[in-house]
Amino acid sequence: MSNRYISILVFVLISFQTAAQQYFPPRGSWEARSANELGLSQELLNAAVKFAEENEYSGSRDLRVAILEGFRSEPFHEILGPTKKRGGPAGLIIKDGYIVAQWGDVDRVDMTFSVTKSYLSTMAGLAVDDGLIASTADLVKDYVWDGTFDGAHNQTIQWHHLLNQSSAWTGQLFGLYDWADRPPRRGDIDDWRLAKPVPVGTEMEYNDVRVNVLAYSLLQVWRKPLPQVLKERIMDPIGASTTWRWYGGDKAWVNVDGVKMQSVTGGGHSGGGVFINTYDHARFGLLFLNEGRWNGNQLISKDWVQAVQQPSEAMESYGYMWWLNRGPRKWAGVEDEGIYYAAGFGGNFIIVDKTNNMVVVTRWLEPNKIAEMMQKVLAAVK
Image (cartoon, rainbow, N blue to C red; front, side, top):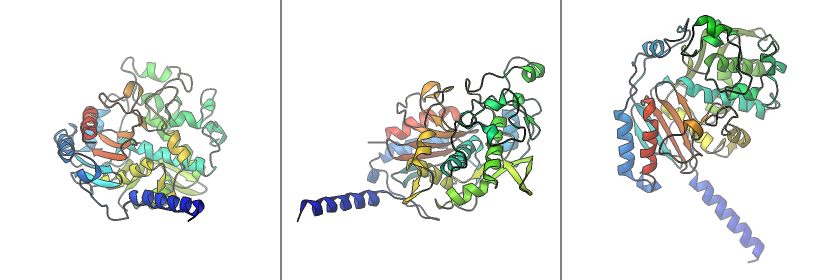
């Protein structure tokens, strides 16, 4: 046999082996394997699950109560979108595509709060992939010219700044003011509303009104509802259920090409956002673990998956609406800086661990326990 044929045979065998090792769950089912079979300690993994079950988020299970309590410092705060009473702790640990641990009601649809931001970021990535947005360095005013980005300050905002929450956008959207969202602990309403915005791109400020400006801007670019884009381009191809929903606020209805559409929120801090079960979260995490590829199909570009993991100039711990395990928000005792994750109010997390080919989804874990939880999960890796 010639060297050429030997090389081809080796290539085919390697390709087959790689394909055989890569499992993607079909719609409606997900294969489980034992921890030991995939190189994990069952005993230590059980300890991680027990920890998650015993450290439930301390806020009310009535999320209207939890939201109003959690954001009581905000002037004029009110519930403007749907909410839902939550379940108890739930989660999945995925290794090499297979379920190795689960707890709680993983079929239950619950609010997910700011985990929604990572889904929203994906809508921007698809727009870049499709050429609807030429570059994240472009000025948003060149795409959205209805006054949203008027003014000396707002007209300098790039998509890049909206995506890493350093835009410092100022104004009112759907009756909500930017300055009323998570105001400083010092001062009063007059101080907040009259404060001069920081220069664009210089500070990361977690602000849901500005995130919703991104959602509104993407609606103007896509010219169809973002949940429809998410369903067609991501959730259906990855085999997600039909139970997830993505809502906006009651006042967030706009006219797009003569059709009434809702501009969705990037979180649930006034209600709304993505409502979803744990399995569907895990599928979304598995897509990003595989650099945007699902069972042979590149659903979102590898370039975008890499882009969301780049630390922003204003905050080393934050990329394009994904948190990074580095910088000031690095988890204590978790040294791998390649880990990145989506995070939401109430202890909702989708964690992507590239080093160990794992996805961890936790629901309703006390937020300050996530580092310890991940320490326990990683301790199970032999």
